[in-house]
Amino acid sequence: MPIQRPSWLPSYIPELQGLRGIAVLFVVLYHCHPRFTGTWFYHASLWGWAGVNLFFVLSGFLITSILLESRPKPHYFRNFYGRRALRIWPVYVLVLVVCYLNAPWFIGPTVWDAIRTAPWWAYILFIQNLFHLALPPAIGPTWSLAIEEQYYFLWAPVVRFLRAPWMLATLLIGALIASPLFRRTHFHWMTPTHTLTHIDGIAMGSLLALGLYTLPISRRIWLWIGLAAMPVGFLAAATIAGGTAFLDTALTTLFAGTVLSAITSTGARTPVNAILRRGPLAYYGRISYGLYMTHIMVFVYFGWFDAHMDRYGVAGNLAVVVFRLAVCTLAATILWYGFESRILRLKRHFENSPKRQPSDQSFSL
View 1 (tube, rainbow, N blue to C red):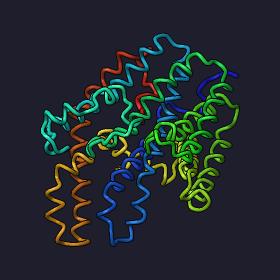
View 2 (view 1 turned 90 degrees about the vertical axis):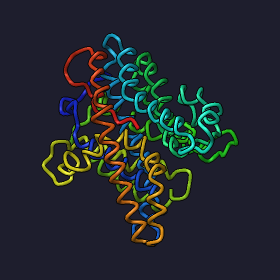
View 3 (view 1 turned 120 degrees about the horizontal axis):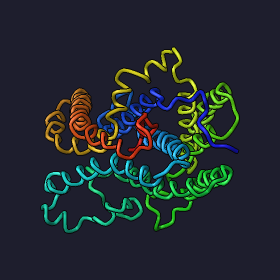
């Protein structure tokens, strides 16, 4: 069974940028949910954590697409890991440095105490989610980044050397089945952010890419599959899967359907596609990595504003949310244009050809 990009699938899918924006806004608003107490939006904000699941599906699809297309090309590992390092490490290291060098503000003890007790080996190896570590809130979001890096560290060689598509599909389906089962076990060594309990989102995205690249299914049928998966996942999450170990599985189905629908309808002249392709959601998708990595740090830094607005009740709480979103957006914008985008220009050194690669749209957290 050949592995190749369908003729109708473009290398750049702008609608996914909007989905990325939705995902990061979900997460930011989730971390603001105490400020929505007493408003109609409070219960909705409690579901914002699901934005990470959407990130995982997006990342699984995009990165696996890159790996499948790069498999027959030279410098497979050098190019993939080089581009991943440029995308992830600069902002990641910057956040760690700022957090620990300003330890009295973001952590509590002195700078020396924070550095001396910090699990640097875990941060360097991206395994901080595998141990019962008390991560400072400012760098708490790095747990999901660790899951992605662990997955792709292992998944890249698997895609390279395991040639048969059915073997890759078997591994991915096994991960989809195993993940909710691990969530049910409650082993004492398994943390709430353990990779084994959150791998189904990335595996589902990878399975989408594998299916699109190998199965002789028309674009229209893929679209109907995506549209059907959305209500199935939503209804399951709202009913039988709610409050169980299978909730993430239901949400993964919902988001996989959403991503697949966006992929197969790309370029369509519909209001939904237009909203996803351009405007605020697409912009937040562009700056999403910096926003995701720094938003809690910004919350902590401007905690004085929160304390000042506490006296005004609900109105003060909403003012805090608006202020947080504005400042976080400004910080992520500066980070993108002044730091991230400049470093990402170096990706040209890790390409086999000068044309744009799908990895230009990497959706890593």
